[in-house]
Image (cartoon, rainbow, N blue to C red):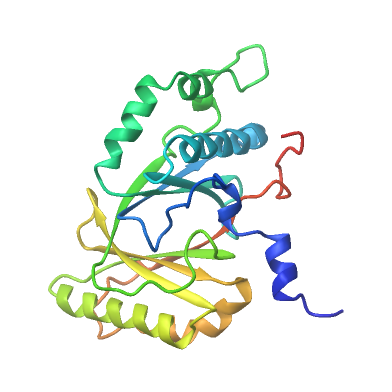
Length: 260
């Protein structure tokens, strides 16, 4: 069997840019001042309705907030089934107020959130779609001084969310190592992978996050040696390093209804 080409991979799993409003230039991890990473676990019986809801919300944000905010929807490439991720790219923290105002005054958006999505005798809006307590958000602030690579959350085939806690007393060393790792990915894998490093706001002050943008999943195997750099013992807290591969949602994916 012949190997899949780059063009075929991009057709089978299109980058998240196809979710954006074509009339405006989308914000992404290379241009946003803030990235909100939101995740929620869908109830298995409502997996279809949940995906439709996620895409509808993202479409509404993208059409109403062009230039201020862009939302992309992803699924876990591996890991938990029916777990939905949003990456919401904001121009700045001030955009938060625009989104709150939209939620308060945009009638179409409010109707979309409030309408019944569970077609059974009990009915129910969006809150019935998700497992109680599973929806959470992290606010990610990109480091200053980095040079964004050509790949980002809009045009990457796969986005890897990588997180780790820095060891007590090792913060300067951990941050320097994080900057070096980011630069290594961007230089050694130019055109195949790009990385951006973030601090977590309003959460754990000692936690670092990367968004690693892959042209496609096959690049990850070549990245492993670069990503394995851990520094001296204690630089990062043992057992806190996590990686989650995210596939941009598209209408051909598992459990997504076609009559959109």
